Length: 464
Image (cartoon, rainbow, N blue to C red):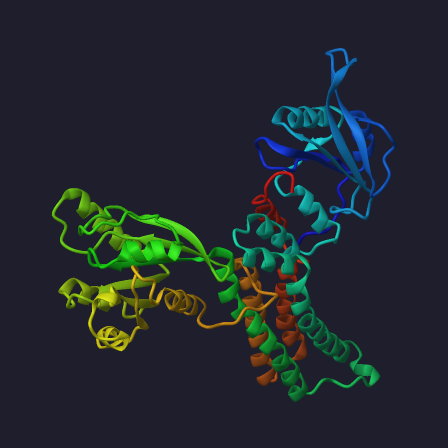
């Protein structure tokens, strides 16, 4: 298990993305940050905590003599422990020229700093106790967010939403452990031993909030990773037209000739904040040309790999055998039916709904890629299918590590319940309760191994 220890060396890195930009930032953290920054640039006023100072970036000769001013920079100093890492931190914001930023970084390294490892600034924040592990992971999630909902969820986690959700459970678990420990340690001093029914009541009270937390992984994983939706059907059923309607631009080529789509066309959209990758596939039929046959093979692969399936039927054509096989193949999978070209049939929308519902018990609705009929309802149906109708909440489990920690906690509590019901001595019940506590602590990083920490922070970008 890891011990949180403060670092003594000073690290430096460019904290803005590679390439040119209006501003680029070189960040230093550690005991020598201020002294290195004072030699790195020529400050016009001494550094003060939480103040911004104007400075000149100077070019130097090989002998160390000042040559000329090559840029102006703004320097901000955050004194320990009032900084991101809880160490002395200095940020130098110069113009975003890669040449200038590289020059500043190399000078900082020559003056005694060390190049930061990926995620090392956030790792120091964790090791200093400023962030727990769920908050540290949320920093990475916020940087990688592609939708506003992802950003909101990450910001909520950074604010400690998940930690606050876990804390009452942990507090109650520690109280139960203390109760059993006291009964064992002070049995000779007339301290009451907790009765079996009381132990059972306390263990049972811990399970509902943990079970709800475990269930939140379904929504958290959706928001974090997103889903893939394969749009499949016969040639010329209007798959590409529906695809373009959903992405709200002409992304796929649409013609009146069947078999226009020969390869997979993909586009990522946000559906109520959930990332959704749409895959427009080639029409499923017996291909006449080699290129079309290859496209159909890829369509079948996309169908097999997709999280969700949208089957597009042509309201003006009877069901063919290929479509019947397709409907049968998706019988046990999350799927929707869109009866397209509903604007071309004489009957009303209910007729096209019946057309699909007679085939399979799958949500179906009439659509028209030409007029836009049913498109908003189709979006809503896709969202309901993706989320299972679950409402948004805060303090979600967003990755497999977090989910495993809660699952391990529940398993240990289940073992403790069985041991208590079997009248096993309290010393043995405590082993299961401590195992539950360790699993719960691993969620926030209090008992996480160094190997796991290194794996987590290595996925961060350098400079954060």
